[in-house]
Length: 47
Length: 328
Image (cartoon, one colour):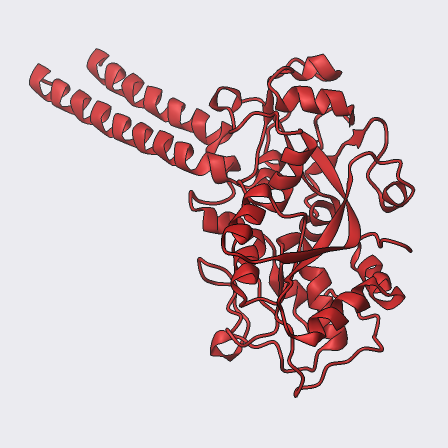
């Protein structure tokens, strides 16, 4: 893989990953304050 | 080869970050960001009057309305749907509950499809209270209205009668796997004032406490504000989102209507919130629930219904619904 192609692919992965992460965090910020208390607690992970 | 590993590692960092968020937060969000979906929080289809198999208290009544009577329109909080649906089932003529399109459906964003001329409505606490003030609902079943709701009614020049008709416990709950079973009132207030932040301070494991709140104006939020005497955190803390949560609700809504087997109610001051402990007064956070109607409502059947609710027949029905009567 050439350096040029490597950088393009890396940039693509970083942009896609950042977009996904930003959308995910925005969804949480909007949904969390109004989410169902009962459902939220029932889905907690306990080891 | 090294370049491919770098690409793979980069991708994995994002995958791991999003997987962490999904497992710890996103997976637990039971609705979208719209408050309307939180208002639509009970399966009303289980409590439809005059339907075979509805989970209603069919206790009978010596009071009956006919099709020619001026039928009071009933609405209420989610937790009280079984009560006012049972009132209609016992007293009203069949055919008085109607639906847009002819058949019941809850398959839309804003809730159930009760027709405008239906004697039963379901708009839940916030919209239903406003409808009562505006006069499109005659009798509203609810926890005690919030200060803001009462001020809103007063600003519109509307005087309300607020009549207690039954009792209910205000309960706190956690995940069933949380080892804590009992909290004192002081501990609960400490948690919701941000003074107690870890479960190990109240006999649990070393894990951050995530105190959850409900939306302003809901019945349980109003009750919580009253319980906290106005001194409590104002929003869910993002910093404790990965902790173990505690929430609050009314007993029958949690244990009878939602009946989620993955949450458990907590004892308060060592007393479990069952019907006996509410009746005998040993459970410390009991509250009345009420019917609200405009003082200037000229429909005489409204008063008849309120009187019936306070009679032995009405109180028996309320008990049969799963709540606690005022004088049973």
